[in-house]
Length: 326
Ligand code: PHE
Image (cartoon, rainbow, N blue to C red; front, top):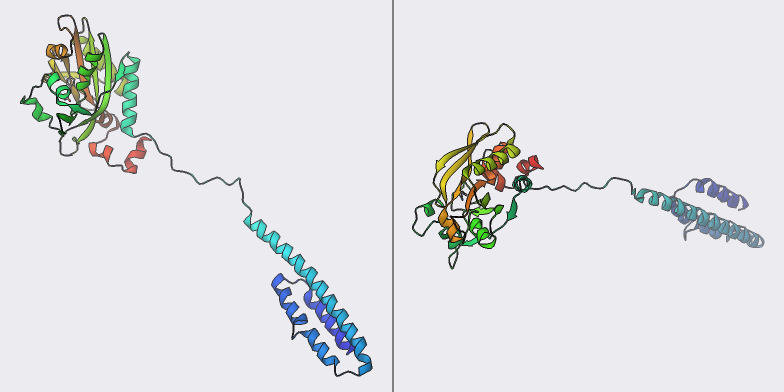
């Protein structure tokens, strides 16, 4: 019996060395469990002579509490080690770079409008705006385009209730400006326009124009040519020229189509001397003042400058297109 006790003690020391937490818990069962080694010894003790039982009982109890102490300490130690390990694994490295957010940018049309504004601002122009929902008077009548005038055909638009419509051009801002401010006037107005055009490579029901208007004493066609030439040089480069071809717009006289030579002659928009009727409609005496005006397409400017073959690209929201201009 004595040998068995010391053998078990040896076995215990042998087995408890270098064990993990779950192995220690298994050992606890193996030695101290209800059917464990120590319980076995207690059972065997009953078959030993009566006078030895007390001393064996004490010895086994001694071994039992030794095992309990060692296991408790070892288990505590292993628990600490495993917790440390877990903490190390869960450690957050605050120096790791964050996830990169996708960065947006201005649309190429917005950029073009800002560029146009910057150039005209530096040439002494002010910036005006007008409503996109216009009425027939400003969009047509006041611009010398009476009802049933054939010029209305080219600018068919979206009519709303009560004589309102989506403006077909930025030219109504000419009249709105002249009603509000006395000459000298030197403004541009950039904005969205609408026409009932089916979309193709060069047409879209929504587009943008930059309108220019200068009204003063002694304003001439030469001033118009000089202004658009200077703008063209700054926008497209030193060697690019503007060409004026006679054309008809009811609100200018004489009127001209304007093209630039940027890899062939490309039409940019219309221009001319403000028609006396338009000045009169806005309350300005045509005997005293003259003016010139022009209207160029923003999409045209961007298409020519950036070699964009189709106006629909601007409105498709295809990132492969948009990101080229970020
Ligand atoms: N508003 C005209 C158009 O959209 C362009 C234009 C503007 C022509 C100013 C002459 C003067 O076609």
